[in-house]
Length: 231
Image (tube, rainbow, N blue to C red; front, top):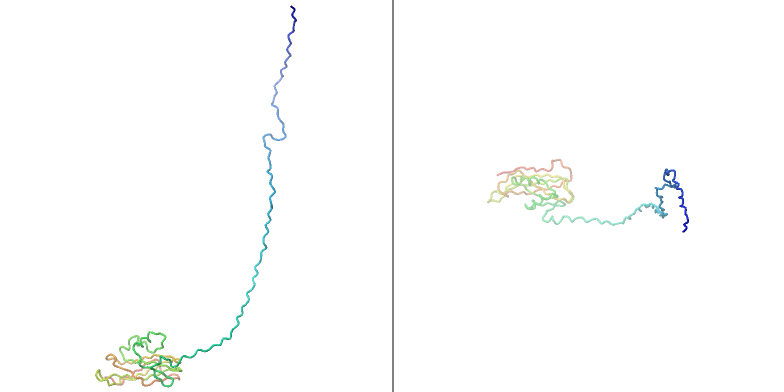
């Protein structure tokens, strides 16, 4: 048998690289590899709102009209003068335009003393109880036209005894007081220095009243007592 001879393939020479690459390949890029691309947020166009201010309205102050009140012609009827003499003068005596009253109770006197609007003369002798120690009288006066000053003359008397009521004149009181207005009422106490011996044992009798319109030459607002007889 014939055998064919085959030659062994000669191995191709392997060429080893003469040297190792000295560095890793670099990748060139135009942008930094590590930085992320920045994205700009797209802003939607905003709607512009235009606010128009209202015009400032100046308040016009108009001056108030002067109100003229027309005066009405009102007819004024003068009030009627009070009746004279008044009804309260019941029981008074009068001569011409002079009026007086002497019977005045103790209650009436107390009412007069407590009423400050009443015109009085010598009321202090009543308030300090002088007239509980000495004999006193009382009179109320008024004049239609008033008086510049008054003079009141009176007599002070006492019964002879508790059993004999015959009066004995003890003395006289001359009372001078200042003016009173027209139709003005005044209460006057006629004060003496005659001591009281027993209760309500003396009485005063007015003898004369003078309403004077001429100036006085004497001291006014005084009581002058002159004793006549004492028992």
